[in-house]
Image (cartoon, rainbow, N blue to C red; front, side, top):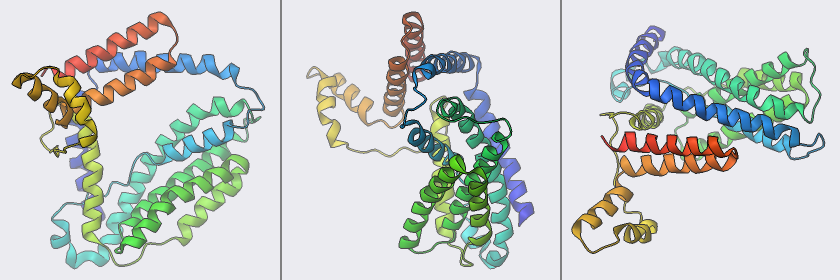
Length: 314
């Protein structure tokens, strides 16, 4: 079963590599360079204004680390046919899901470390950290991220709805507690994470259909991201009426002509074009709000206009 996961992982990498080449093209790399450069510059300018006695820094850092830990969901790579084909080998599926756990845990740990690096300058404003204490914070991070991935793995084994709701609370609650302990006592946070990994074991009964649904949800989110840059055949949008946007449809329609009506309906209800425009517009508004340098703000606005136009025109 472990060899089956390795073979699927290799095919998964090959498939994603085709999309990554289209996403990270020259234009997008330049856009990311300006975007992250502007955010880093603004972050560096804002840090000196934070008072060393600011009480809100600890809750903000804790919320940020807990949110970052959620990144990198458990990748099981199960297929819709697995509930039928692999049903006779359900007892041996633990080796498959254990390999999926290790693969996902390391990805989550790397993403969480990046979030910790971003929050460290803010944390240093209110707490004195020596060079010897930093590795223990990183160790506490590893425990918190690994616990979350184990929680996702456990959710694949829960067959009842109330058990899944309990797992959802566990996925947010345990990382929150683990990070709270790690920020104050790194060794205690590391011990808490390792203890959860040792004593929290999934049940023997595997809900294959729920595991397939979790994997399909994860891949749908990934394909939607790729669909912002290129056409992904696997993405199948769902049409929703969205009554709360009816006023916006009438405002966009403007006149009584059929073309104006179709344009307004298509922009609001089309899951590909509409969502792309709204998301990029929302990100542009947030970024330009925090960037106060006039020339850089203007450059970012032009950059986002170019991104919207380059994706909508095809």
